[in-house]
Length: 271
Image 1 (cartoon, rainbow, N blue to C red):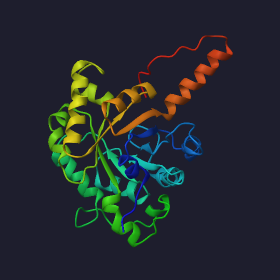
Image 2: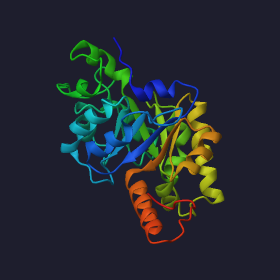
Image 3: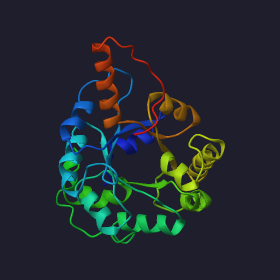
């Protein structure tokens, strides 16, 4: 019996799957954002738990996965590197999916799939004592065991010149579900201006390659306006904002208001 997750269900729908970046190791922050009505016609269906650049590490995974899963969203853990033990630890702690940085080739992609799947499709070690806890309705044993290979979302980040060069081959690797664009690293690794012509051309190539292979295309955005533009381009999975981005901007804007200063808008330029 396979299981369903919020991100899998959302990616099968007609609208983009919107999520946000969690960089702070706080279940309270995650639940504050996710709990209750969203006030609009959609909700966040996934949360990127950032163990690569955020303040989150292995021992935070279980609590964060359960907090996010209990609110009807999917925790996707971005591990620091595409190593087998890192992927195994994230999944055994209840992640609904994993994301790995710096996928440069189809060989990289095939390795990541192998690490995320149980035999005979991969080499993931068996021991999901705690994994089903973040998945309401999924029982320990056959429910999780038989559904994990298809139910877990595998996303790889395309954020280098070699990744773009090989993107069609990466997209064709069986078991890869999502090609995720890291636009900041992509610009830096390519040595081009972010949002410039060459940068945008690479982004559009990744989008096209994902869809040509029947995979989903995803991207990190800096704010809602950026996210809306990417949704109109056809991206399937979109990170709208980061926790720290909202906290800093919101708090400083309230400080300006309290001090009698005008609050001005404008695009955000970072995390």
